[in-house]
Image (cartoon, rainbow, N blue to C red; front, side, top):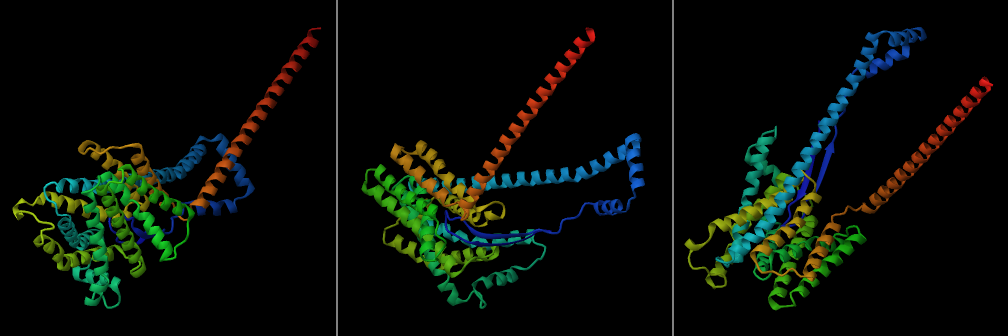
Length: 456
């Protein structure tokens, strides 16, 4: 039986989840008959062995029995290999589905937001409306728990168990404000600054620049949390900064593009600060605890952040004519896409690896590029393309594990050993062929000499 225990840190958009998945393998069943066969072989006499050998050579029944035993032993191994291949195929299909879903949800959020701004220019109201959908996290988690878990608990019991994440006292009013308000503010700023930047720059540039948040996470973790230093991640951070400068240069340092780039970089910084602060103050959480935490964020957003869009409306900063003209279908589409993206980023680790999830984020950049090429008048010059590729390369370098250098050395050493073995086998095969040729030639010469001697 396999036991799974997982801990995940809920993150903002485009942050890969931090999860520790522990698998405990059960005892494997021994092959039937192997122990009996060994015991019987140890007490057999030499005469019995000779009789069995003779019977195996002359009798077809014993030969069939031996073949039957070999087939019986090979059968379960073949079945095990088939099961293993089927499981790997399922994992590959699930991983591909998660990658495509992450890519489509994040790219769809950016493209739909730009379309919504044409008729509803209120980015903070959209941010607040989308954040209210976080209230659905814990109910959705409980539905999945009630459907899949053997131990059934009512919602109140599950809620109290998940509240232990906040401490022995549970979710108190003090903890609600001290442990929720900072993360809710960072969550709101991350999404608001990103949506505000989409009004200034294209979705391609915004999604590519937002990938720099992973480099900011590494720098903050290295400085604040004293994480392990890795030279390749420093190189990735340099790539990210170079990509930001090159994208700014590609637009000619115009005011609107510079402001949009600055807003996306600020959004990525808020996202990185959210992740590092969560790891520093709260550590990690189980699936239910993460769902409860995100639901509490939605509750804080509905209760206290609502005053901000209200003030922006009455001051005329984000003013719309009437509530009947609000494109509710587009707002709900953005909220659903962002909710799906957050679910996949935080809970997709249950079916695939965090690396594949992060690859889905990178793939949203070319998807946005294709959409922008058909919908807007963006110019993909050489500087812009190189900048986007540099940022994506830096993002992929940050996905390398900490022991990547040792793994590379092992891979190179194995490759060298395999090449040496191939060379040795080829040399041995050539030598065997030469000896065989020489023996054939010597036999032929001896035969011809004997024939001639006999004829004379």
